[in-house]
Length: 549
Image (cartoon, rainbow, N blue to C red; front, side):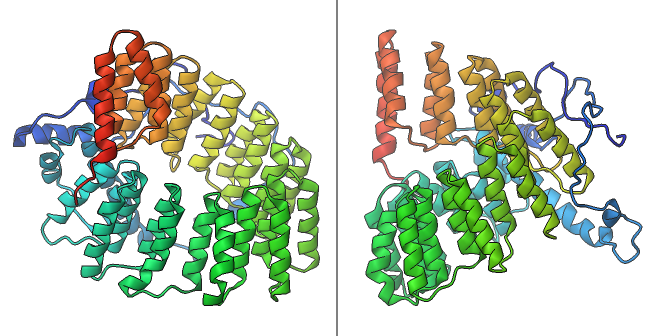
């Protein structure tokens, strides 16, 4: 590709899609011959567009700012810097691992009914290791039932033993579908096998908090002692952090007051509470905690200032945030990249583009290496101002100066394009994202694009993106199922909506009550009350029948 030529957009012939039955239909019981055929179809392939691509030849001149890199720093001519051969083996192993994970996930997600996946896994030829199992379980974080089935299959493989990490991934998945009875059975197994860690209890507490069961979360923290583990201040901080980040900072503050005598409270304890009050936009309480921190003899550091600045920025008190920045500088504390990101994001969201640019320039002049999050913050600022051409140009410059864009880069642009109703442009950027190395769309990006098409009434395109995602072995979340089901319902495709509702239940995901209520009423209105009743029965079984370990 020529310098200055950016292959950013592609033609408008559409995405490369897979037929519905290829990924969503149940698989039959398989013979060895059939398994071989299916496994061939599940081998990861690079998705490419079949249409002709074209380059944007920099239609707007680059501004005078530079990204702070010297091209010579990346030169392969440096005789003292040669890592190609040393890294080659790890690159190959990493690529093989990614392919194996995708192969396993594609096999598992082909059959929502879980009727025939084992024979395909047995004949997949994939080398089952702790790393592979942990990575697959992380990919199945939104499908607790499926994660449990894969976990069981893996532990039956010759010479394989689960690690603490794989147990934790399973617990996280099961916690999302509120299978806490089974989780405690798993805890007992981990104890018997010597794999239990304090992190296990932190994870369970986090899932109880997300399930809005604060009492059980607190009891879980205390139960560490029953399993021979002693909590220290880092565990206490972790628990307070879990509460604070789930909008339960008031409870966290109460527990802090009740239990602070048991631990040697440190600066991090206070910064957690500061961040919690800032996240719920309560500057008064945040200021009170800050004063208490000072009275207890703790001096604010860079992290503390970063949290205070973020709290004021969230409340749109950006002038106060900038004053804190200046105060920090006067104390000879060097701002972290995160602080610059916070100010750039805050100012950009208020359409103060010139001010956001000022802090970006200050960051480049600070001597810190330019990083992707800070560039993404500046790209977001351009998008808030609807200066998408400048955002695209910055993506090009990131490539040119050795700072590669990531999935979040494109997600930011797509999000703002959707908000601006520039649907076709968002569609093209999404296509480009799929072909950019290291920018493979993630679940959140797919959700944004599916929601975009559903809101525009372009349900067939939403379903095509859905199937593309399924082809990658990515499991939809409950929120994404809600989007597609509601979209289908709005245009009267109630049988299709029922299909996805049933699939969601079979994967162990509990739908919001309103989602079922709306679908049920719509089915009853067209004389399909029996179908509504069948879905209700399955939903009730999901709610009342615990999974068995």
